[in-house]
Image 1 (cartoon, helix red, strand yellow):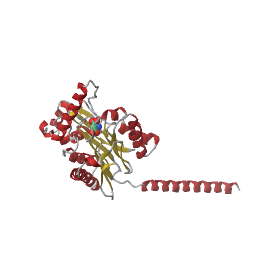
Image 2 (cartoon, rainbow, N blue to C red):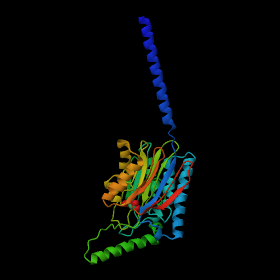
Image 3 (cartoon, helix red, strand yellow):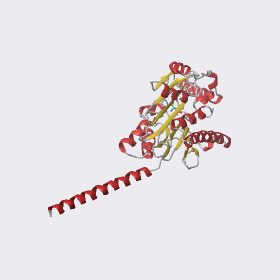
Image 4 (cartoon, rainbow, N blue to C red):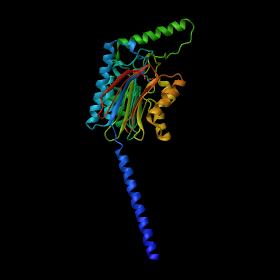
Length: 349
Ligand code: ASP
């Protein structure tokens, strides 16, 4: 009798083990089914971007350049390239265009110079590279990539960063390469406005709220589930000597972590630094287990709005969900995920 009891218990135990095993298997299988949708999202700055201030022709120019950048990044991902490569190459295209405030189209400082910042982060390794205040680098994003890949540091600034560029065989360009008429005029307009305020005895802030922030950025997820993000900028028109914005600050303007998401920001940099926006979005996902959309909205639509700070972010999470969130009138942006169409937008939906 005892023997029968024992056998029955063993049988039951065995059954239990087998069922749990199966259940576990089903869970793993289901988890494996959560398909990674590779893709990328880009921005060309946020701000007072309204339909009534652009001609059809101007609109077309922006859309074409954003599309060219987006498709370049997408084709890298589609062919099995890494998210880091896609981010770098996509941003290079935007840097080479005078339309955006990065590389060729960088804005002018108060002293009439162009000083650029950029950063890139690999979500798989959490490795990152950045450059700040560079004046002779055609593609600051690629120098940031070299800092990440070929130096033991994260952020190199000014002359040191340019010395490193020379060592890496990067050609330095003359500062005249960055001259564009429209950016020069913007600086003059701000200076005239400030002079007028000063003459009336009114207080003025050196960094006036700009019409638009033309910084560029990209966040990507590759076929292997690796996330990356990058940002490049000329900063803010009329910025003071040595001013560094959020774009080269890992955690403020750029962040990527395979556990959560990849983020690139644009807007009034000082606020993005103070609120550590890009990292905060990732941290909310990691610790509060909330969606990318909610995390981005908490920061951009709640926190920053309360501080009267303008800007936006683009981000992609580890499953390929994309957000483009901004509290300004518009944001130059675009995205494309596996099997989908390229989407380009400038104004609010
Ligand atoms: N965030 C940049 C900065 O403050 C500006 C921009 O987004 O256009 O330097």
